[in-house]
Image 1 (cartoon, rainbow over the protein chains, first blue to last red):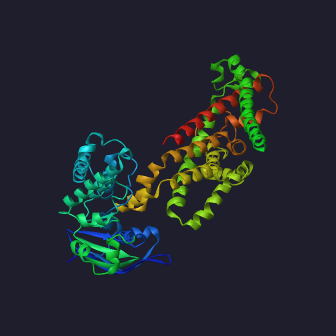
Image 2 (image 1 turned 45 degrees about the vertical axis):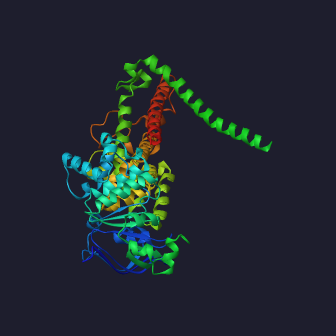
Image 3 (image 1 turned 120 degrees about the vertical axis):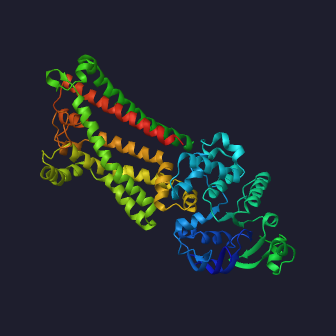
Length: 247
Length: 277
């Protein structure tokens, strides 16, 4: 059984259709890369999966199932705890590094000080950030560098113990070294989590993902194993895109 | 050439505003301070206010002003903050566009009208429901609380809207409800703006005169309860300046100086808080 199963999903912002009749499965424990040029519906797909589209006042048709249960029947806070998201620009909340990480878990259960200490340490270690910040957990998180902020966001998501982690161009504003650190983190975490990685960087998709889906103007053009899709794409548009002819 | 003239003209106008403020300040202190020295600090800070017979104690008025202001905040903060949160976070654009100007319109109603409504409706209501004269700390607090609402609401609303949307998304993304996001994230993030709004509202409450004269009763003693009559610094100046002469007049200017100091301190605090980021 697939971790996530999307059936005939369409998404509309007012009159504009951002996703057109998408059906696709995400398998447990894989990294699925979603590539495509701007306006192809990649981010809308992620915002549909954790129902963040609701705050954009978008409307939706079709069904999405998580472990064979419709996400529209799950309480929204449970859904968003199970499917975490990392945005393109790191969203650092006001307050200390420690507070940034404990913010999510605190919403769902009571935590003692030692619980928080343990949680913060484990999350930061998993996100490969612990060694860089362990001396200054009480300091404001806004002083971290861009790459560190993004890893802090990953730590914050991990602290929720999600099952699926979605990343929306997580490295778009980062230098190659920070990008490499985040990719390494993803490959380590793959054992325990399922990833959906939206990226503009086709090389990144080729480096880290198991399967890749190519979106174009709201449609799913092609999906398959990353190696197959990058070496012998079926659709001409996929071929053009990965060769850099447009986008 | 035209530019030069316009520049000089604007400079002159800007300076004249500042100069008139300086002149007012100088005048108030120049008229008030000598009396404080003449009467002595002990007399000035006592309870005995009999300015025609050498009693210049302003303590009961200072306490009265502070009580009424505190009462106004007790009314204005919860209602103002709730309105700002509702407008900024829980209502549609259409509702915001209708309600915000209406709330701001409250600031345009003359204070004598507030006082009038207080006398006609609030004072009899308090007298019949809770006893006492009706003209009371409670009546003044409620009316002033309503009068400072527009300040608190619009500044807090702007502060909430200034919180970046990414914070909200980040909070929703980890499963926070709207209410949790407001309490745990947005209010702390907008704190400096909200506090500044409250302090500006406080300045307005402490300086308000006409409405307070009409509904506070103006008895010269420290009120024992919120149902007792009260007199503020501003009321005293307005009520007595018309017939005051000599030291009495000086004493009223001394009241003005104290009021001025309180408001300057409040404004400095507000500026400090808003500029800290």
